[in-house]
Amino acid sequence: MQLDHSQLQRYSSYQLVLLANLSILSWVIIIISPNLFSMDIQLLLLLTTVTVIGIPHGYFDFLVAKKLYSNLSNWLLKFILIYLATSLVYLYVWTVSSIFALILFLLMALYHFAVEETMNLKSSNHILMLALGSVPILTPIIFHTDDVFSLFSILLSTKLHNPEISILHQYLYVLTVSIIVFTYARSLTLLYTLLFINFIFLPPLLSFILYFCFHHSLRHYLEALGDPKLFDKKIPLARYALLFLFLTIAFTLGAIFMLSTVAQVSLESAIIKYIFITLACLTLPHLLLNIIYESKFS
Image 1 (cartoon, rainbow, N blue to C red):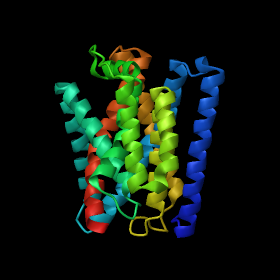
Image 2: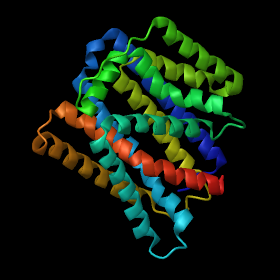
Image 3: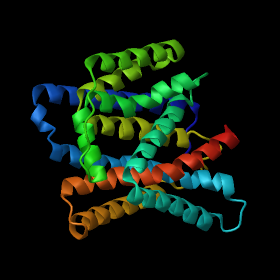
Image 4: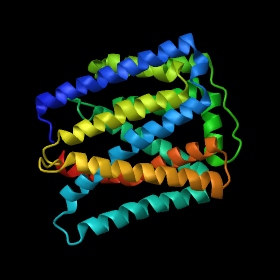
């Protein structure tokens, strides 16, 4: 199924409405019954949504590779081997220097989000890209420092010292980004107002779910389905979607079981480590492949 321009616009509107409604629902729950979003509930939501929505959006990399390299012999095998090798190299870096790997992951995510947020704008610049890409990375760190560094400590298996960030620095950051968005991308003002409210007032894991799954990933699906260079109308989407979903769920369950039993870490730590280290390992080849694709077909 390939989307034409009008369908892409319609479904993009639906995606924004879904994001807004889920955000408002989260605000209402936080106000009325904040204990409802306990850590256990957040981890369950994180594991479910990232497994079902977040991770599978990278499966379109298969179509990107097909467009780029299908003229080569054994291109699929070569693509899978190189993709997995790149992920495993990053995993090795994580085992050698987890702090360096985490910083690299945050920088890669910032750049990736920046490119995704600006790709449909008529014009963009490095200042705008830096501002937009920083919102999902820096805002939770600035406004939920203790919670975010607690998550970092679990990822790194070491206790980190939480930096002190003043209220003045918090709102200077928001004001600076808001001015940049209003100056260079006024059409995104309402969206980033919504995102800022989420990242400032919602728990970090919950705001991450809303951004990564219901904004970034869903929009990536729509962009891929609307790309005539990428998506063949004859591809049986439902069949591939079910196959990839099954593989992702099976891999997730296996990884969580191995971490919680063989590695003997708590279920909370197992979920956090699995989700974010897996995303980190997949982000590097995903980012590199999309950079190559955009440079050739943009």
